[in-house]
Length: 224
Image (cartoon, rainbow, N blue to C red; front, side):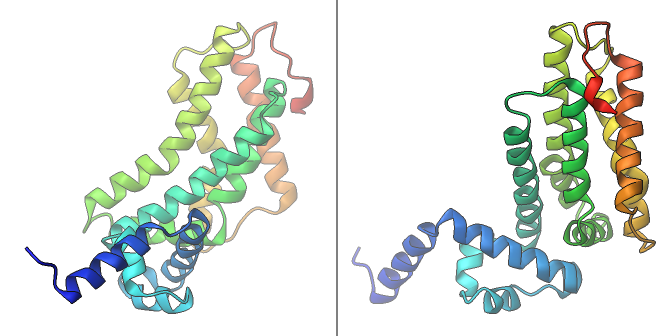
């Protein structure tokens, strides 16, 4: 069957969209995050995102077929940035106290950023209408951070430096101790802790964790 001129044009466009650089995709996602934060899910328009990005709507739709998938991609991008930052700062690995402090500071900064809080509000509002959105948001978001910490804790357990019965629950409790109440307050518009309160919160969480799970061979000198 002979391709029509329109079909050939559409094929060329599809190929050009697939060649979008990773840097450009990141830029598209950051602009999408801003629009979601400003307009909410229903009010967010792919057309507005495309205009801000100096792109066509087709550029967005070729990568993200729906707004739900686009919102999830926004969250996934931020979490991947966190993981990349943690990989760099925790390699070579510092002692456990320092590692947990670095981890806590990183997730505090990202999860409680203005954009992420705004996107979190959007997801919690839309989760009843789109249950799959909430599930994917969790699996591509907080769960990945939990998994990262679990992997680290299991490694330290094997080295005999931590004594933990259930590393997954312990990781979740630690993370909740860092961002739980602050995120609730931020979501409700009450505000965020001051830098001093943030540092104190992290220090207490790390010290409590090491007191509960650290062994005699656990070097926690830098956790204070």
